[in-house]
Image (cartoon, rainbow, N blue to C red; front, side, top):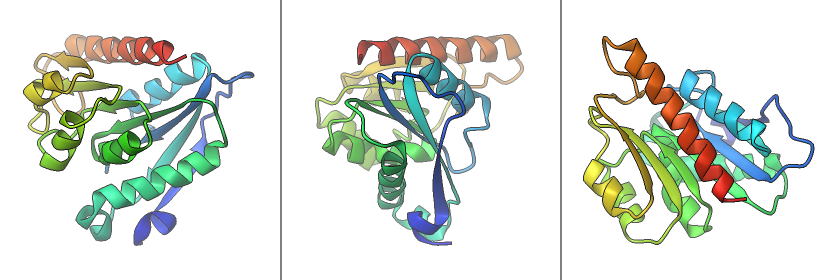
Length: 195
């Protein structure tokens, strides 16, 4: 498959609030889907907080890897269309999904960026060159995370000691579970400030 139109699909989350406070679009990683714990619970937290959540599933092929920003932007646009109109929009991206950062900044959409690829200069520069609103969550042991860039971005930052790219601390399930809980609380608190 090539292009976001044939390689991605958007769907509404199974919990739909009666009177949504806004819409949230959730963009996964290249292999980390909304079925994995971090994104599943993030969707659930947002839905229970009143957001109409739309999730994306995609196949990241070679053309997507060549131009990830365009691929993710197209998928995000399709997800917004599926989500329908709203007064507020929140974008959530995990890893590969954080290629939506420039797209979200252009539209003044706040973002929750889970394990963003801050080692990628285009994404780091996008965050440092704007006054965007967002939350960055990363693990200190993640090679794609840059804590210095995160702190200089002006966004809210949650850096988790010893956590890797899926916010897992090898050999310590207690710490990994705590990291998930701290992340979800940060997401909930950030999203509540937007309403």
